[in-house]
Length: 118
Image 1 (cartoon, rainbow, N blue to C red):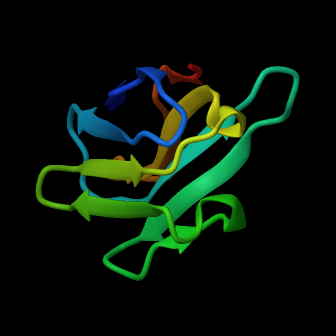
Image 2 (image 1 turned 180 degrees about the vertical axis):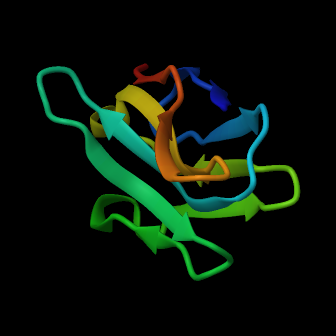
């Protein structure tokens, strides 16, 4: 199973970004879907996550200005982030916990760069 992330780029402060991630390959189920980010010189941190069809868990720094949605039939997850500021700059990684028929395994996308700058 491979994850393909898209949607990064250069954005103006105050703007919005939509990030999508799709799982390809054979999977028997996806439990957790999430987005993490890593700012320059900082550790990777959780942005948002959803387990099954539950309520999304949003990090405090994106609360009120983000939405996370998943399409379980298509194994895709979408993060919409608005009110961008310079602290949102970083590489955004999608993550999924995938059932391969025998085990739950962790999968990471290649990362997509989001740069917030005027």
